[in-house]
Amino acid sequence: AIGSYVEQYSNTVQIVNKRPADGSEADYGHSNQVYMACEFDHPYPCTKILWSPDTRSGGARDLLATTGDYLRIWNVTDDGSGRGTLLHKREALLNNNKNSEYCAPLTSFDWNETDPNIVGTSSIDTTCTIWDVTTQTARTQLIAHDREVFDLAFARGKDVFASVGADGSVRMFDLRSLEHSTIIYESPNLDPLLRLAWNKQDAHYLSTFMVDSRRTIILDIRMPSLPVVELGGHAGCVNATAWAPHSSCHLCTAGDDSQALIWDLSQMSKRPVEDPILAYNADGEINNLQWSKSQPDWVSIAFADKLQILRV
Image (cartoon, rainbow, N blue to C red; front, side, top):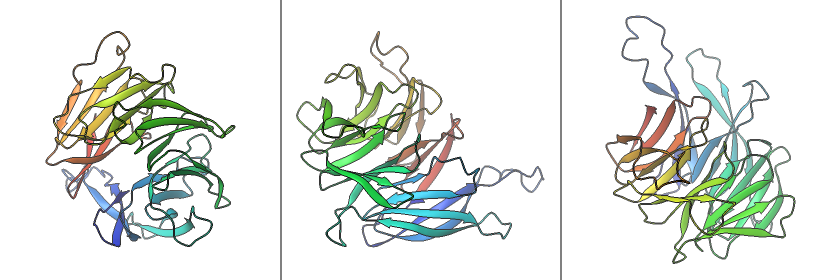
């Protein structure tokens, strides 16, 4: 699923599928193409789009979440035409402001993989909200940072999550005791930290990066305040990072230099990590990337008006 980024109210979300190969001669050269299976309107640009990690229904119910002005949950189903096209229906619109129909914009969210009924959102109003998808209610809302919160990510398991924000800190929370939080890291000049990714194979490690920075910071929660390693390699500012879903020591980074880089961090505790093991040059500044959990050989990147799916 991909979202448009137009600085106006009317935006769209598109769901794309890869064409299945049928083995015919006419199919040769086209099986690697993707096609649009569904498109629907979305108010304002999406700040994040994620499919539900819930596989318990055997694929009978595909839920998609988006953030922007609100958290929206969409249900996507086959339209029965046999052409591979899909229907969408909005299941929920969740507002984190109980006192008004208006709410502060949401900057990001994460879907809890262990308990897919839990979604956490971050907002420019300094708060994080933990939602119950089934009851469509907020379980809890907390003031997470001193300034805007830019991202939130759950660790492996259902209780621990972390957030980053404009105050330059990475903070870790536990749903079982939200009275306290742990500051894992603060950037040297308290420069804003934009994004956060948690290693799902080894929950000791997080990645983050500062605004307008060419470097990716790797943190070990057992050793707060100091990065384990800082990754260079980019000639422009970093825009996205993603850990390999099937490996504890591989990370992909992408940035304004049009590069997507894959790093091997298996030796990072013993020596600096100087160079990536793989590099891909796109035809434009890479805004976002995802490493597929269900198809771990594939990484998708977005730049300009294009989506590319890369085989690792």
